[in-house]
Structure formats: C-alpha cells, structure tokens
Length: 345
Image (cartoon, rainbow, N blue to C red; front, side, top):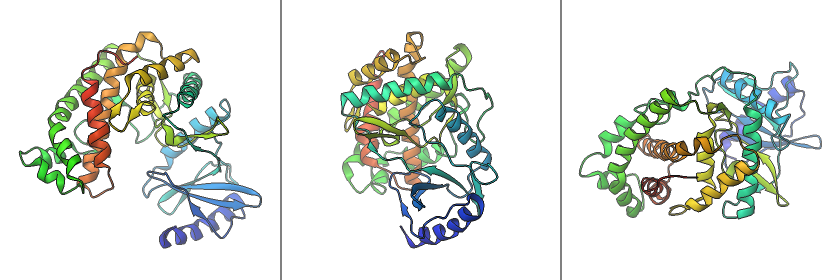
C-alpha cells in the first residue's frame, strides 16, 4: 500500500468502528485487480473482510442501486458475496467524498479462459445469473449508468471521440501515437486500423439505434463486467462472482456477446469457435437469450470493441494508464476479424 492509502485506511478504520461496530485491524493490504475502486482487506476478529473504497465523486445513489441488485442476486446465487450492513442497516456509507462498502473476503484465483471446462462453468453461471435477473422487480434506471441505447457515441464520461479525432486523424497519426506508446509496433498497428475504428463507431451508433427502434430484446439488470478477473475459482469450482460496479438495466444479449468474447479472446484477436461453444453452454444451462436473438450478438460484440478502443485512446490522451499492445493486437484486430464474420453463435 502507498503512504496515501495507509493514511486513508486509518481514517476509514475509525468510521468502521463507529458505523459498523467493527474492530478493524490496524493493518490492511490492497488487493490487486481493481480498475476503479481501492479494495482493502483487513481482519475483524476471526473474519477477513474487504473494504471497497470508491473513487472520489462516486454517486451514493448509484452505489445503492448496485447493492440492491447484488443482495437480490446473492439470495439466489451462492457465489455472489453479500455486502455487510452498517449499524443503521445501510449497505454502504458516505465517507469524505467517497463511498465505502464492506464485503466478506472471497478466496480463489482468476478463471482461466483457456480452460474449456472453466469456460463452460462460467457460461453456466452467466445463464443462472441472467435467469434470476430477468425476474428482478425494480425497473428504474441506475443513476449515472445509461443503457447502451442512450449512449452518446461522441462524448461520455469514458471517451471523447472529437479529441481522439483531433489528435490522431491526420497523416502523422503514427508519430502522434508513438508519443503515447513505448513500443512502436502497437502504435503502427493502431494508426493502420484507426480508419476502421472510425467506420465501426458510426456503424455501432446506427446498429444500436436500429435495435432500440425495431427489436424487443430481453432487458434486465446485467452484471456489467463478466470476465475472468471477476470470476474466481477454487478447487475446480467457481467460488465468487465479484465487482458489480457496472450493473445496470441492459440488453442481456449485449452481456452474453461480451462474455463470449472475454472467454474466447486471445493475444491476437479471438477464437470464434470458443465463443460459439460458450453460447452453447449458456443455453444448455437455461440461459434466457435464445436463438431468436442470434442475429444481434455479432453486431453487439462489435460495439463492445468500439467502446473499448475509444475508451483506451481517450485514456491515453488524458494521461491515464492504457495498454496499446492489447488495443492493437487484440481489440482492433478482433474488430477487423468480426467484420468478416456473418454470425457469432
């Protein structure tokens, strides 16, 4: 932990005693893997717990929505951890300009997407989660988390396409990208494929608008980030489904397409046969997205790649960490590959 994180923990520790009645240990350690939140593990008597500390400015209302979904699913799916309640029965607390939530520590290692058995087990879990979420009783939108059909494809909290175009649209884009990538090869590949991204961004906006206007796809809260890093394995079984930060009402087909991608991608794109097998296992386990929505899976997966690419390039411009190697060899190469395919399932 950094010195700043240690000081933050000491302040949080006093709040946990006063508002949760927890006798939190003096020492804490930061768990690896959190992209936005800081996850601090600590002891309370014989129990190991995790304090999830949000970034500054996180909405308390948006977090409360997430925790309602988690609690509802956890009562039906045993591998979803239940947040602890404070003394006043709230499931999270406002602390300074952050939101703190306490969870039990869930042991396990990240799922291996290269293991066929793990991929099948993950698909079965997604089917179970989707089946229960279809019956979730709350219909309200999640604050600050718009559904795909309401995305602004030009500017959002995550991307700024106008800034990306201004920075990298010229004939010197490879040289400009080299300023943000230590390795010249990813910069070359990204520069080569940027015209593809420009076309696919326009296609994604049209596709989503058309689906919203003309299709009645299954719609319910989703997990939002179903990938190997949030699926923990222990003794050959799934031990936890973590990180519901991005849960929101959405087309279930979008999450199925994204999950099939996450569990079939490689260092140089992805393997369509693995994606199709993932979808097969999902349906064999009773997953509600059936063959009637097969035709939307491929275009929705292309939107996933567009979103990831715009997000990464915006992070580069804003001086945030990004992975040019992943974007070039996996994200954009997969987008190029997807354009040649007629179906995902």
